[in-house]
Length: 118
Image: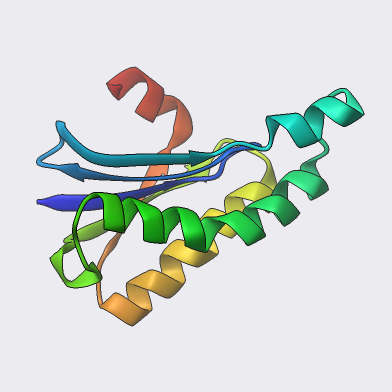
């Protein structure tokens, strides 16, 4: 089973493709830490706006690096919380859109539970 994971719970935008729960085929992270350093911390609205710009290139790069097209993805996992609401919405809406386009199921992921699993 190949899962596309999407993570946008705070200031970074990430996508990864994992096979059978253990083999990482790709792991792409777009960091906005430099932008936030200028303001002394994360401004939630700015984080979400940057994620809107980053999410599609990050997903495309994750698929490309894994040498897969969407037809080879079985499921889309997406962080649904906890996190910054604007940031979470970017990931959730992207996952929902890809799910409809690709006819793939979505698995909601709790950010804290994912840390424990990792």
